[in-house]
Length: 165
Image (cartoon, rainbow, N blue to C red; front, side, top):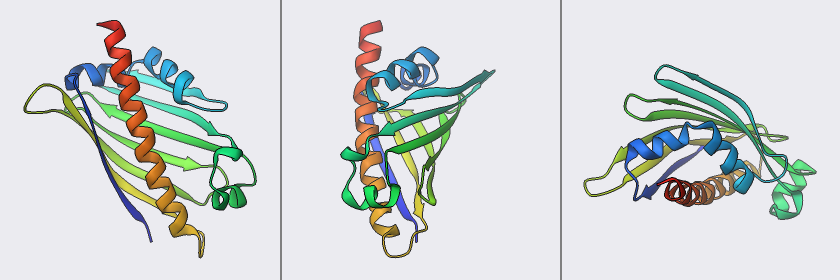
């Protein structure tokens, strides 16, 4: 059974500024250098009029994983993450696949200005791991870790934008 994920991050920056960062190749490379972990790289980047898509590879060393994950993976965790953004409405999709795990995260991302200053980024999706007995535990772990990563990425984005203001 899949686990629903819904996570909200806020920024003091307007949606247009946050969006511009999220689809900027230099920003993605900078973010990966700080938060990407082992073997992080921007695998693909494609921009056309009104849309941007990219694929990221991120890594987590085995010694930083919970024991249940280490037992299943037998090594480091490699995360393949693909995002596709549309400028109209600042919406996107995300797909995440983990090496050695029969499962994935699929979701939609929306970025919108708040009533006051700033903006909100919302991820809504589901995590599905098809492993009997431990799949649910891994789904919970993935949901928790994705939330933490999104919070760190939001902080990084705010700092990255502030350095360029």
